[in-house]
Amino acid sequence: MSPGSSLRRLHLCSTRARLTVLAMATAIVMLVPMGMVGASAATQASADPSWSGAREQAGITAAAAERRNLSGLIETQTPGIDLIQVVGADHRVIAASPAARGRDPLSQVRPSPDHLQADVEVCPKNADGQCLRLTAVRLSPAPTSPVVYAGRMVSPAPSRTFRALWTAHIALLILLATAATWKMTSRMLGPIQLMRAQLAAINVSDLSTRIPQPPGRGEIAQLAHTINHTLGRLEQAKSSTEQALQRQRQFASDASHELRTPLAGLRVRLEEAQMHPRDTELPDLIGHALEDLDRVQAIMTDLLLLARLGATAPQATQHVDLTTLIRTETSRRADRHPIALDLADRVVVDAVPGQIARVLTNLLDNAQRHATSQVRVRLRHSATHAELAVSDDGDGVPPADRERIFQRFVRLDAARSRDRGGTGLGLAIARDIATAHHGTLHVEQAAIGGAGFILRLPLSTPAEQTGP
Image 1: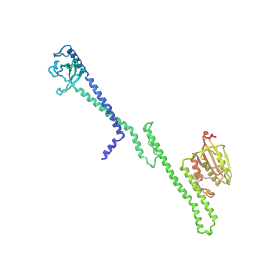
Image 2: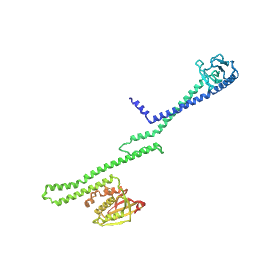
Image 3: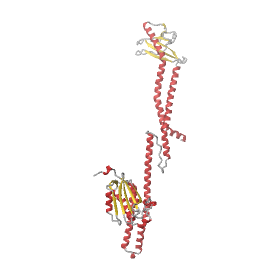
Image 4: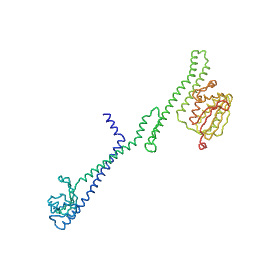
């Protein structure tokens, strides 16, 4: 099959071509019968004057024939009707008008006994294209009843011309309906073709492109809206997949990087003990090995928590009274620096209690490591948010590092010197938990001189805060 024939077949199979063919077929089915009926009615209307004259003359002649036996010449009493005959049952001409005298019977048609009158049109081949239009009237239902014929020769040319014009008119209407359908479907399907081209141009690696949405609420506008909505969902799914892959890569990178040091230290101690078993003190070896394993376990626990925060669906939240939670968590601690509390009464948020407690613990642990003599916890609320501030009187965080410290395994020099076994993931975990609760966590200069970490969370609505 040639490319041209394939293109033509594809073109004919298009929606536009199918709709056009359907419209043309519908126009033919509707207009052709109507045209035929209209042409017949119009032709009949144009022929009615001839028929009415023939009927009038046939009736006059039949009435005269019933009163007396006609023979010989019949006088014409209707203008234009010059062919009159009275023909017997044996097809013999009994009487005739001057124009029909000496001619064979004008017609062989005899009305039935049930219908005594009939209109007849005969077009002889040798009549120079003219037709004989006459009316036949049977005098009685008897089989031997004569028949009166009255009519005239007419030209069929006007009727044929009228039919030709009427046919051309119907054909023109069909062509106009077909062309209009082709044009309308072109305008209707044009936006769909444009959307198809734009969808074909969208790159899988970049799903942020959207197709223009036509105005209104029509089917094409709804289709464009649905396509854009689907592209948005695909973009979100792609983004989620990329984030999951990024989290997997980050997890593998973090685990391999941070676990290397404690595992290497543990291996060195074990190999040294293997090489010098007599010089190794077993309690000291076990103690150092357990310290290294505790650090490995803490790192793995924090890494898995970070992975769950980013990969799993949010847990069911509860109404959490931050005032009560802070008092409970601080009362369990045995820190080297005292914690000064300044808490507003009954500050309620929607949160996962364990995760918010983990944020508080990480911030307090960080403050205790960096504080010189004191740690403060302040809780306030605005019309829409709760604000928890954990401050210390240490060296603080330089402005250039205030975002960097929330990255995984980032420790400033001061932090390294004061480190007491932290994994380097506490602040990263705290910020991820704040983000998961639609809140924020940032650091600023504290009033007591050190670092002040500010956690802001949306408050529960008043209706949600009321309860048993």
